[in-house]
Image (cartoon, rainbow, N blue to C red; front, side):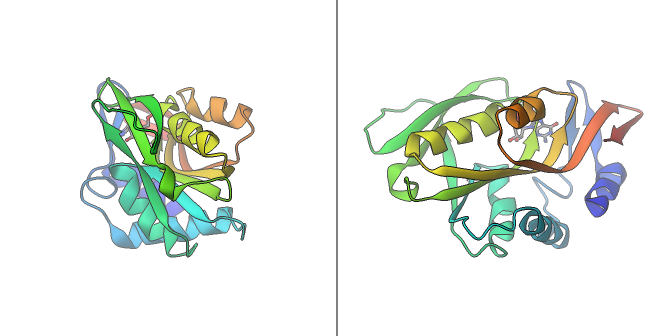
Amino acid sequence: MELLKERILKDGVVKPGNVLKVDSFLNHQMDIDLINEIGKEFRRRFPSEKITKILTIEASGIGIACIAAQYFHVPVVFAKKAQSINIDGEVYHTRVESFTHKKVYDVILSKKFLGPEDHVLVIDDFLANGCALMGLLDLIHEAGASIEGAGIVIEKGFQQGGKLIRESGVHLESLAIIDSMTDTGLSFR
Ligand code: 5GP
């Protein structure tokens, strides 16, 4: 998606540890006109009428998923991160290692909001090693729901997540795929 790539080149900042900061337009301050175009592009890439729910993970995925959902006319449900939990049988549960915070989170989703009848599109801001996305796919499997695909705003193509997810057969669409990133610049696939 050219508009997104131009914006990453203009305002993205590469930080040590292979972290791209896009907090001026995507995940802290949010450029709603841009995210609206992102939402339309997800709809174009996932035209299926079968989608019944959009699933994301807190916090940065939520705003993007909500704007995209206006083009799908389905509810957004977000997985919650918890430091520690008592699994009470009312929630689906998985564990996710955070790329940016280097810790492992318990991630939960109420059983009320996802079930075998659902066809789910996953949306998230970044794909790096794939831990967050694989955690969300675990929750969908636990629920017995169907995976319609995963839409990612920025994939860091030099990390393994995209390859793992594509090899697993999931329809993955990333709107910008970064092939290399240094403090002097970045290039897209
Ligand atoms: P993964 O689980 O694929 O390794 O990482 C995905 C999650 O880590 C995303 O939900 C995102 O919040 C965060 N993340 C990974 N890489 C970056 C990055 O380069 N910049 C930012 N801002 N977040 C990232």
